[in-house]
Image (cartoon, rainbow, N blue to C red):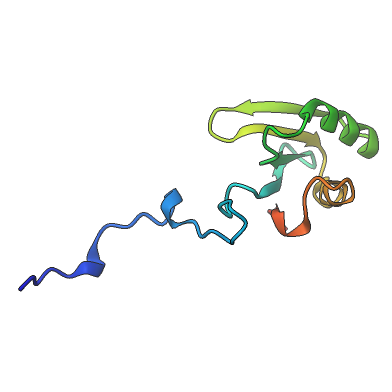
Length: 115
């Protein structure tokens, strides 16, 4: 008779094994686009867009975002997070509306962080 308790094993909640598949063939965490606002100095802030993947031409997208929102922007390459778009100013809602209007992604795939 085995007296070991099975539910006391080590389980890391942040591993990819625990991501639930929503039925579309992709894991839920890989197809999300994260939009964040990072405070710089004083009233200055930077909006970051992460998770667009390699299917889009990010240079053309940054050019369109800069032209539409009248701000400066750049692409940052990160080893862990991939390509990240940075825009000057708090443009979170504007970027969300742009992505939905241009058909880049649906509303349920966008996560806006911050208040």
